[in-house]
Each structure stands twice: as C-alpha cells, then as structure tokens.
Image: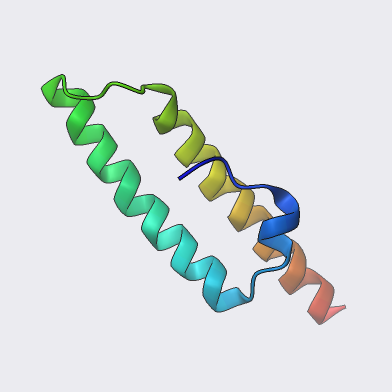
Length: 69
C-alpha cells in the first residue's frame, strides 16, 4: 500500500477511515515482526504506515470537530 494522499482520505467516510486505520495497524504489526526477524526489505514502509495512521486520525478528528461546531 502506497502513501495515502490527504485528498483521498478526506473523501472517505468515517467507517472507511476506521477500516483503513485497522488495516494499517495490522500491516504495521506484521512489519515490526519482519524487522525483528530480519526479513524486512523496505524499512521505510514502517515509517509510512505510522504516518498514514496519524494522517487518517488527524483528518477524522478534524471532520468530527467540524460536525460539532
């Protein structure tokens, strides 16, 4: 999975964002195990996954804040 663009994330519904976060967390878990066993080839993917999760959570919080105002 490539880095997610903010425009793509903003177009997602809240359920889609939750699903994306869940899949990224699973991917990150697997990447950590691959790194620990020396099987991870693309080490930058760990960083991308972590930042994608943060990006989605930030946009989700902005959407929720916009609804309550």
